Length: 323
Image 1 (cartoon, rainbow, N blue to C red):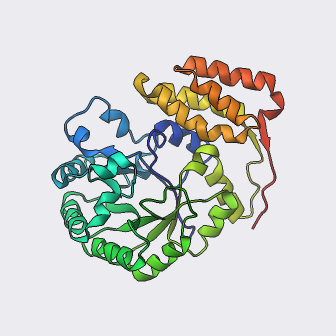
Image 2: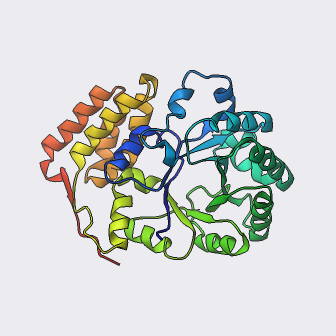
């Protein structure tokens, strides 16, 4: 049985438009949403229906919730439990300063007792699979990480995703993938690994014994076909060898217009193209040109003009070795 491939929760990126783009190539096993703040969700915020849109495949979507208040997180889990979904995930890994200072994200890793109590409450509120995404912690201390995760497992967490960096490291150093396998050896629940996967070949290698699932984020935005490519490599089938980059850019902008509110269009288009443009030779120039625009139609014109001037870049042709 193949190890599951997961799309990471990424702010302004992991929404329906990206899921549909990935589904065009065959999809992945599970899609995590961008983090859903508990307070706006339970208070009926004006954009929450967009954050909780689980289309086009709700049965494979995992809602990620974030917040500092246990009561609000519990209420949010109770609300989301009513929806069709694959599970509910708790964000205990985001190290963005505003999130951490508010007591959310990685701040939960400061106290084993508080995190354990939260999971115990959440477990009683949802019949869905319950998971946690986290980091190593505030210090490079595997023993603390193991104790933290063991306590969550004891309260009913079904699986854990580890991004093996400390709270302060961001992307300054390589992810410690040995921590993923070490944590897997300690726990009785599945452990997914996330971080620094550069391509489909590495995705397949990581899935061949180090962990129980592999989660990718930035790579899946840059290459929405990567999951299909990895599965092809696993089964020695031909990989997608001719990608129409121009059409994919237009397809994303169309999906964004259909599945996100106008207030979100500019920020989400900019975030998508900040990764997707890396497939192109003049990516820095193109990103700068796109960032100057604030509407989908204007960005479409910039995109069209680039390929009019560089028609040789419309299609991405490459050979990927079979492992």
